[in-house]
Length: 248
Image 1 (cartoon, rainbow, N blue to C red):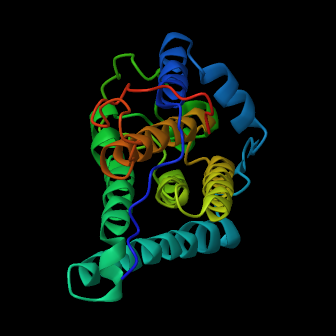
Image 2: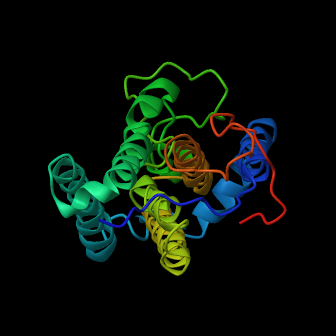
């Protein structure tokens, strides 16, 4: 059987981890609420509500069916990984499939505990959008309420952005397919984000946070599980190892 072990293509880990971390710090230092509300106002009609709140396409197709499709991809990855543990042709892809399962699982499972921890209200629950809750910035203390907020970060966007793991899984052996996977993941996550913003389920920044989290998770898992440097390079266990001259 032909070995699939190969040296990874150069990747500037310092840059591509520092950028999302820097954006996270910026979002914490500068409250994005004014921009969030300006964008959400485009989809809100006083006395009517958010224009996409009861849309069949946005709720049943773009939310429910699309989420089920991504779950299907995850289930296939799990089945593939389990089969790779057996003496089948998939065993040569065991590490890659294991990476995909782990990265996607972490991306999606991170959302629920963060929602419970932060208690951020959805736009449709806020007073300025016909609700009865008071808006507070992410790091501010929440006013007393009998309705817990569960809207930060964006959960549905994570269904799309979790597919960033496909980009890292493919980049060393199928660069063209990896670029396609990257475009698909970013497009799906963005479309899901816009759809939920039109429904009043999330502010735009909620979904930007999701993108940043999912990118960092996929990147770190790639570094620890799949990335292989040429012999003589820095220790691959060091996340901030060599910075190559050809960043991807």
